[in-house]
Image (cartoon, rainbow, N blue to C red; front, side):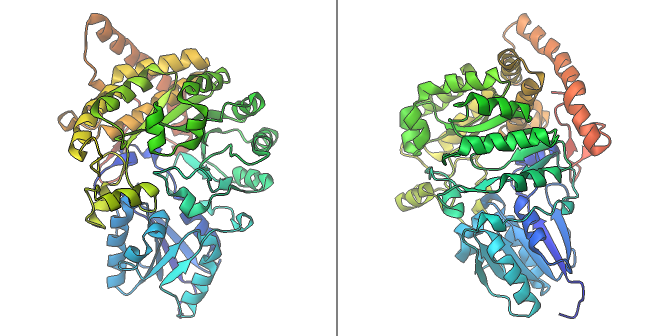
Length: 512
C-alpha cells in the first residue's frame, strides 16, 4: 500500500423502509460492534465512522469500507457496498445477519466476516495491507478475554446511551432468536474489573448493558452481578442504567438492592406470551418452568426496589388466533408491568423458527435481499396456521393504537409511580412506551403527523377529556424536571427542534 495512513470507513446503515428507532434520535444506539472493530484496527490507520441514524449517506473516500448489518438493514448495507465496489474500493461486511447468510452476502460485498470479529479482524487488516485479503473470514466464538475496550471516540453523534457488554452467549435457544447460533450456548463472562474500567471511560448520561441476560444461569452469577453493582458504587460511577434480563431477575433481594443502588431504573424481560400454549410455541423454557402465574410476583418484587419492568411480547404466534392478539393487549394493560415492547413474530435467518416456516412454505415476504427491509418486527411476514399475514397486520393496526393510546400510557405511568414510589422510573416507563408507540403506530395516522397516534384514545366523557388535559401539564413538568435536563447537559442545548436527518425533527417527549 502506498498510502502511509490508510483510511478505514465504518458505516452503520439505516432501514430505508421504516423509521423505527429513528423516529426519535434519543433512542438511536451506537453500533457496539463497529467500536470493537475500530479498537482492533492498527493505530497507523485513520478510522472514520458514519451512522445513517443521524445523517444521510454520502460517498466518502476510503481505502477500506466496513459495514455492519442487522437483517432489516442488510439490503441497505448491500446498496452502500455497491457504490464503493463500483469505484474499486474494497468492502467488508459483518454482523449477525451476514453470519447467518454468508452465501447471500458474498454476492454483494468483497469480503464477509462471520461470527465475532476479534479473532479475525487483525488478520484481515494484515492481509489487506499485503494485497492478499480473502473473500471470507469466519470469526466463530472468541475468547472473552480478547474482547477489547470499545473505541468510543469514533461515536461522534449525540447518542444518549453508552452500550457496555459484560457477557456473551445464551443457553436458552428460544425458537425465534439467533443469539445462540451467533454467540454460543455458554455464558462467557468478562472480568468485572475490566468492565468497571470500561464504564469509567463512558461519557454519556445513560448506560445500556447489552448482555442478553445480565443475570445469567451460571453458578455464581448473582454474586458476579452484585460485585459489578458494588464496584460501580465504590468507583463513583453515577449513571442510570437498564439491561436485558430473564424472569429470574427478581429472585434475590441483595441483587435487587445493589442493582437499584448502582443506578438501575428498568430492565427488559422476555415475557413473550401470557399463555402456556404461546410459550410452548416459541420454546420459552425458563418462563414455562416458572409458569405464567409467576409474572405478577416478579413485577411486584422489582417494584419494591424502585425498578421498572419493560416486557417484550410477541404477537402473531403460530398458535395465535385473532382473539389472542386482543387478549394479549388487554393482559399487558391490566398487569403490573410498566412498559411494553410489542412486536410481530418475525422469522429471522438462523433461527429454528425461520427454518421451520421456510420448510412449511409459510414465509410470505421472501424476495431476498429486498424483502429483508420488512423484517423490522412491525409487519407480518408469514402466514401462520390460524391467521394470514394480512389478518395479523389488520388486527395489529387496531391493537397498536389501543395499547399505546395517550390515555393508557398515562395510566401506566401513574401506576408505575404508585408501585415504585420513584419518579425516575415512572417517567422512564412513560418515555419507553412513548417511543415504542411512535414505532408501532408509524404510518397509521399520517394525516395528523408522526405523533398523532398518542391522541387516538376515545374520549368517552368529559372526565376523561379533563384527565388528558391535566396530564398534558404534568407530562410537560416532568419533562422539564427530568428528561430535558439530561438532554440539555448531554447535547449542550435542546430547543425541541433538533434535526435528526433530512429534516426529521426530534420532538422527543416534550409535547406528548
